[in-house]
Image 1 (cartoon, rainbow over the protein chains, first blue to last red):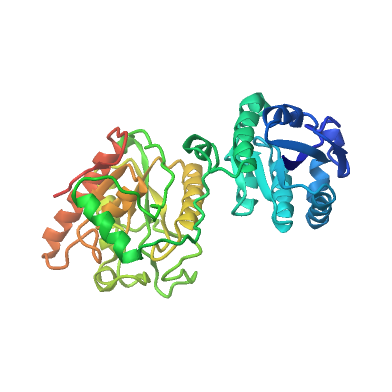
Image 2 (cartoon, chains in turn brown, yellow):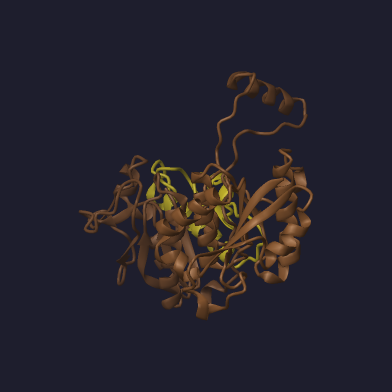
Length: 345
Length: 65
């Protein structure tokens, strides 16, 4: 029988709610709370030898101390595996579960954690810890415990997870080293041949996944305020804010009030990934203020924002660009802008 | 979004894409005489405005050419 030590917070450990968040780390022999349900589902292969209960605040005050205590208890109870949670989407509880999993890793025993994919603890769990997906709240307790028990039963029997059980674990896209009988060139050619012959194959490389943004509803441009935004690095001559020519750490905005065109005497392009000659000769080739002013005068555009917004897309990480977009959008909303013309180099 | 490399915004899931002229000159063409280049820029901006006025559910191309 696999010996399991189970980590719970003060709420699921039956101590109390937020008023007990400072409850000290304690240990009780045998299962408690959701552990009783879990013990019942794994009774053929494993036994819960002890339950650790700790207040959610306590676990955050001194994580190193808590990890050391958990490691000590793993040894004391000669546990083969640690289970933490399910923590659902509870943030502090999730972080505490990640701490418990780290202690298990330190003691070189298996760890299984239950969490919702949005729980911040997901990113803090050590790479080889299985995180079984749970619902967002304890309403999902029964189903979550069932999924955890299925994984535990496999671990106890030293069996591989079934495809469904694998699916119940949160994918973290962590690269692992594996040994393969064929070298990379052979595997790549096999894949290519499979592709050419319309046969199925599995790529060893995951394509990056970008979050999708719902398309904004259409607007009536003659009644709308439009802003000009660019990733092409157009700045006032001399680059007063030191916008980086690659790997940009910021976005900046510059006044175009009273201007009908972006003239080469006042603006320059500092983008580090392209030949900027054509843009420097006539900056409207990057940010089309000349045409937009013309359209504004004709009433084809309701209004133009009095600033343009710019960063450099060259080698700038997507996550940082996403943050820029959130910040620029917030500013545009403040200024009642409802449409954007975004130009890139 | 106006881009001279539309597969990039398409990969990122940009809903409204207007192909630009060239990488170093997305809104123009230095080989054209000024009036012709302006006409080209006018066409691209007009397409961008048309895109803003169009309901889209997924990535949609608006060709200015």
